[in-house]
Length: 548
Image 1 (spheres, rainbow, N blue to C red):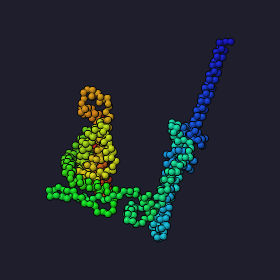
Image 2: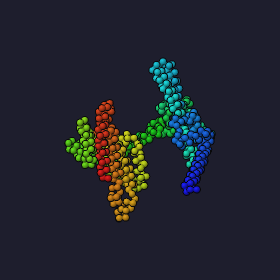
Image 3: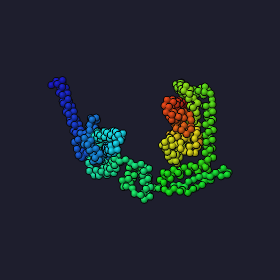
Image 4: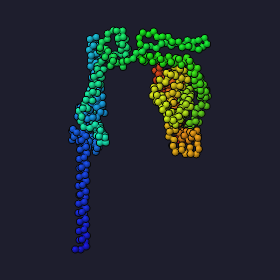
């Protein structure tokens, strides 16, 4: 045999061996893949317990991202929240239950307006007949639409949400799985607690709170009240008053010859008790009157300080000729923000002058600057305290939460109660509204100073004061400047609300235009406020970036 034949024979043997190895590897891979698929299928079936084939195929499609967009689970679509309860998916239960309750409540309204329509027919009131006919039709259509949409949503979401439940079950075996009919007991209790009273409320006209108070007084006088009226007032009207208190004694302040006042209490002669709301409201009013009578000099001093500060600022912005003020604004914007912002600032000033808003705009800017100064002077130390002290954070943070969640108009109440009306109470209301960002962002900047930097400063012999003034505050400057920016923006947003209590400025134009239905005038003043806010925002942001 020649050497070439030997080589060909060797190559053929090697090729056959290679092909056999590939076949063996393919068979092993197929065997491993089959085992993996079998294990996955067994896991699916163990989780579902019933309808195993359906959920195995569906979950596999979800894993492979092959589930059709229009795939629906018809068992869930028809079973709705009962299906979800049976499967232990309580999120789907509440979604389906809410949809069905909304549909049922609209059907209850159909019944209520049908009864009202019948009464209107008897009374021969055509306008009521037309109104109730229209309402009945609308609520019937709404009920059908909500029911259909709800079932489609449940059917579409069911398998997708159920697969998420399966994924959680693979990690934590305590997650609900399979079918457990005892879950229907929990679902039944929820339905029994929620559905009857909700449906009853939709079919009945809820009595007014005044009527229920009269009912309570009738019972106190020994008069009879029907069981239905009692039930309606106790369940579908306002929350019933459980505690009645004697009306507080009246408080008067008698002025003495020397100008001082003496508190004089007069026993209450009211025969009927009052609810907690009335009792506490009168107590608060009496406390405010007491504080004004005996500590009025404190509030007068605060008012005088605020008025002095505001007059000094207005002397600069309002008292200075407009060309000088405009030039100063342009120079400031050019120095801190560059050419583009300067052009925008010039356009804003032209807008204010062209539409006759110059004086009122400068008054608004004066209030904003006064509020910003107070927020910085008070908020910066508070922010440092919150950032460096756990006790300070525990004390101040809940107060800041309350300040940021109370509606804006509520700030006007204590300001007017203690300081009457005018610009000083407007400044105080603005300060209360705008200070939280200053405190929070200052504290955030202090907390973000790296510990290694502070340790290095202390290692070089820095005192606590030097650490604060030369390390922490400079490094926290970007966050502090962001707080100043937010203070300015929020102060401007309070311009309209503060104008209600006499703060004046552009906000007064908006409020006056709203009262007289002058939409155009109000919109022009509102645009002026927005432009001022944008100019200040751009300047502060660019100044902060340049410092960085």
